[in-house]
Image 1: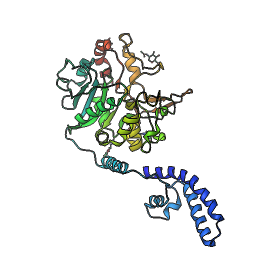
Image 2: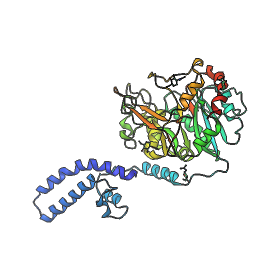
Image 3: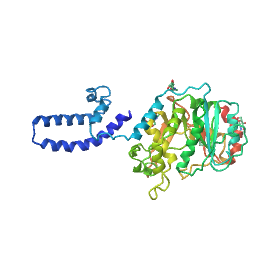
Image 4: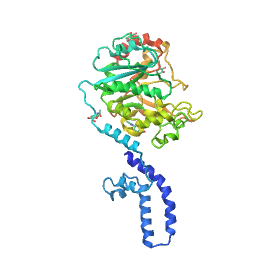
Amino acid sequence: MKLSKAWRLGMKDMQQQMLPPHRHRSQIKGPTWIVVLISIICVFLVVAYIKPPETSSACYIFSASGCETFASWLPNSVRVLSDEEIASDVVISSILNSPPMVSKNPKIAFMFLTVGSLPFEKLWAKFFQGHEGRFSIYIHASRDKPVHTSRHFFNREIRSGKVDWGKISMVDAEKRLLANALKDLDNQHFVLLSDSCVPLHDFDYVYNYLMYTNLSFIDSFSDPGPHGSGRYSEHMLPEVDKKFFRKGAQWFTMKRQHAVIVMADTLYYAKFRDYCRPGMEGSRNCYADEHYLPTFFHIHDPNGIANWSVTHVDWSERKWHPKSYEKKDISEQLIKNITSISESIHVTSEDNPETMINPCLWNGMNRPCYLFARKFLPETLDAMIDLFENYTTKT
Ligand SMILES: *[C@@H]1O[C@H](CO)[C@@H](O)[C@H](O)[C@H]1NC(C)=O
Ligand SMILES: *[C@@H]1O[C@H](CO)[C@@H](O)[C@H](O)[C@H]1NC(C)=O
Ligand SMILES: *[C@@H]1O[C@H](CO)[C@@H](O)[C@H](O)[C@H]1NC(C)=O
Ligand SMILES: *[C@@H]1O[C@H](CO)[C@@H](O)[C@H](O)[C@H]1NC(C)=O
């Protein structure tokens, strides 16, 4: 798939490079058959360009892998992959193509990226109660040692590091959580959550939603505006072309194979570490946690990700930060409203924003999009605990 796409993209450049030589050479006075032969080759190239390789009858002249072989004859038509890219490609595709690991006791890893204590620990404890053995908890507390109120969270901190908002250290913390969670072979799906996240459904609903699908819920969309592709730097070439640059919220869930390929990647990671930073080249800001994984998965497994995040956030006020829910906002209706949403919405950052609406498809069926929500202020804890039984018994 990817090769043939690269080939077609390469061919577009080819056409521009090849046509002028065609005109030159036909003026050369030489044996007619050379002119004829070159003309035939050129016509063939143009035909092959106009008709994409998948449908081109020209390709069938060659064997099954003919199109690729054919492309490799053409000088400079296809970008030559570096050793690192070839190595990275084979590792990633081998992991994706191996059968998923089977566990007798599949668990979901809940990974909390916090500053210190988790304000909603009591609510989460209610969520986990009675489901022991089907989940594992990991906490990355970037600043203060957490104080726990629940046995489920006791001793679940991993060694943490400093996290700076919008910097690569955020991605490093995510990778640290994934690495620790991957050590338990029973963990089959990995969920990243923040301080301000709350559960919207009961444990069984969340478990079934994540476990019985082959998708990872990674937000990824194309934003041609200043807060999307405007953050792209050509230093990311050749591995990351601008047209593959994507954006998305950092709050992901991913299946085990995807977590492993994130561990395996150093090539793309380094590009984002070095060239997607706040205050790049003067005033341009790029935030690795919003672009690295959405772009990486768009390049390597676009059909393996849902393209939306199962963590809801309300951007409808269109401010710099999303809406923070206060105590007075909490009601059964609010939760009902969020859990009834079954379309994902992406808005670009251009002057005339484009709104993209897609149904949330789970194994091909339209389902509610969200399992978790943020940003809930700590003052909402008691109201959320009071509501929890109500909204979870009705789903
Ligand atoms: C997920 O993939 C496995 C094998 O790769 C397959 O057996 C299973 O049916 C798939 N599940 C869904 C829900 O598509
Ligand atoms: C996610 O988006 C990509 C690119 O637009 C698309 O190719 C892919 O099919 C989408 N994934 C799903 C599961 O629809
Ligand atoms: C829920 O949604 C309805 C319909 O969109 C809206 O009128 C109402 O204000 C919402 N309520 C809350 C609490 O968000
Ligand atoms: C929960 O639901 C019951 C019955 O519908 C209702 O009486 C109660 O007030 C609800 N609790 C809260 C906290 O809204």
